[in-house]
Image 1 (cartoon, rainbow, N blue to C red):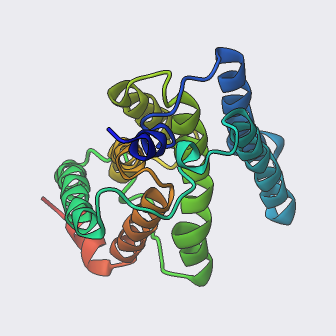
Image 2: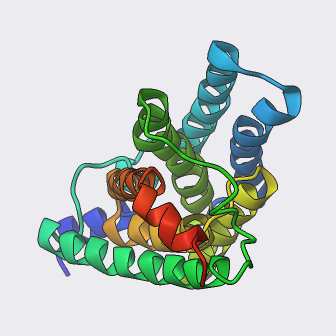
Length: 232
């Protein structure tokens, strides 16, 4: 193996050296403060947004400093591994997994079992919902659960364990704050895999935004509510 190739591999996310547990704890603590602090403190509007930007930004700065600003080890690169064609196929496969989860939820809801709240309220399309679902939530959540959580644990845990931790944390946070759904229960595991496999945060952000767009369109559809909430 050439020296140049070896240097490139040591700068990649999957080949990042393990951080000490105190450094990891600070990174994960800032991610948790950014996510949990806003609802717990009742922060809304610009104040809540500023809180999240500050806490998550501090986490990114901390992680960057502890990794010596080696961009590949942070997942802050534009290079996508292995290639764009792979991720087009992967996006279709992930969509199939989430669609299967929704199919199960639909079958249950039509029989009066609706733990995910598919029939509890309408979800009309609006500009604010589009902004949150397509831009704000993907950036905030992928920064917290992938860039900070997966990134801090890269090198400390193997990829399967890292994916399991990130996916479980993603699902647990949505359950705790009322955002439970088939997408949030399985999506975190898929997005964590996408982050580690691609080596860049750009891929899970794009997939998250694309998935939310499909979800918003589906939940705003009268046909979906007739299918989910109609008589068996």
